[in-house]
Length: 279
Image 1: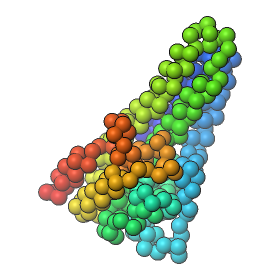
Image 2: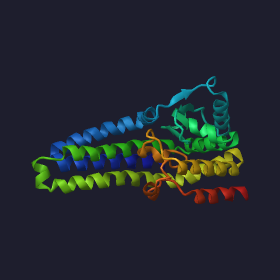
Image 3: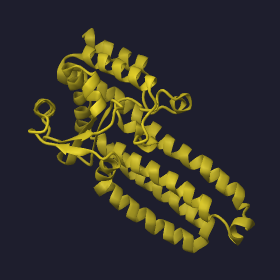
């Protein structure tokens, strides 16, 4: 199913680029846009994880750098029967975490400096178990591709704004076309994220509870992370296109962003986890 979703995302990205290329450049524009989409799909599949990690300046952590964190991930990987993923640290006060990569053999788990400060070791383990479940369920490729594609669609909207002039623009009422593109492109990116994220988060929460045997610890972690996000605005290093990758939406404190949240609410996630405590 995830492979089908991957193909669908790539097809959607290609179709959007071809449509916009044809609108603004006719046949030649469509050909160029198609070529760009093909290249974008290739690099997104093979290198999207590296792109996302580079966006956040993530630094790989070895055992000697942070033994407790590294061993925690290693133990969870063993429990989940997964290869040891690479571990990364993001120098950000915003407490959060995400997993990325194209498959379990090429996976990475990234945590921010902020999350290490506010969670207890057991809460942190539950968060890492959540991310390991994403890896096990092969959610990470979909999530990482969606981040790359959302960024590409937003870039396309900006491209349309700056290069949408000329006779073709006038013939087709291009001013309106550019306005629509600037409005619809970010919405399309959000819809891509919404389509893949909510069920994934429920599944990863449940997987964390099963892996650690302590669903209450994840509930505590989610409460602490959500409260922290509400108290502070996301830092400038946090990219909206990657919001769906984090364990909690880093923009949850913003009212408009919450309308398009890629995550279930805290209450919904707690209800899902509390079912595990009664088993």
